[in-house]
Length: 308
Image (cartoon, rainbow, N blue to C red; front, side, top):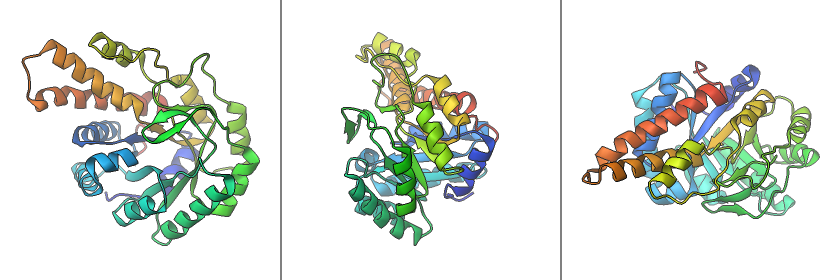
């Protein structure tokens, strides 16, 4: 199956009250781990590429990895998506480079500037039949270049106005999730009332949750056991994510959990087998750790098993 754009994927997810996982990719082993999980679960999947991944691996290499992945299992629908596009030029380059979906992130801009930037990207993308995700509101936390000291929750009425003016195809909303591994200092809480209001005002419209890693404590403990310093890391409880899915969220982003799974595995291997220096020896179990983590997300959080 060739790369697809997200419309049918999200329509089915909304109707079936499940979500599609958007998993960030940076190298071959991460791509393989995600795709093997999606294939095993017969789940649609989004391979998500950040600005940092583009800088690290390069657009041509990323696309070659994605194309190799979809040729290995042609039965699983795959979207390749730009995560937090920095501006029009980056979105344009990814569209021209073969991406089937892009996100333009103007959430840090004044409202009218966000509208104008998003409109510009939508006009270019829709001319090539490419999906556009945008963001309204701000998520606290730090992930690569995306950072904010505090939350700015999405205003439901403004969300309606934003979608109408920009023509964006999906919207990332801020309801209390955060980027990075340190999402909550106190009690975990998401504003489900706000989500319900937005959903009521934008019925059947694809909503997205960023900053939705759950930061599994077994990965944190394993990292710390073998020399890591990831103290106090806390994510979004999985029961909250499942509730958001039942309320119509169609896409959930996962990045931090992939990093933790990969790094915890490598740290453990290097500590227990210090004589090993062949990268294949430690990247093999690391790839398996990514696969197992993504399988759990698909099966137990997103509910997308068997939906391919």
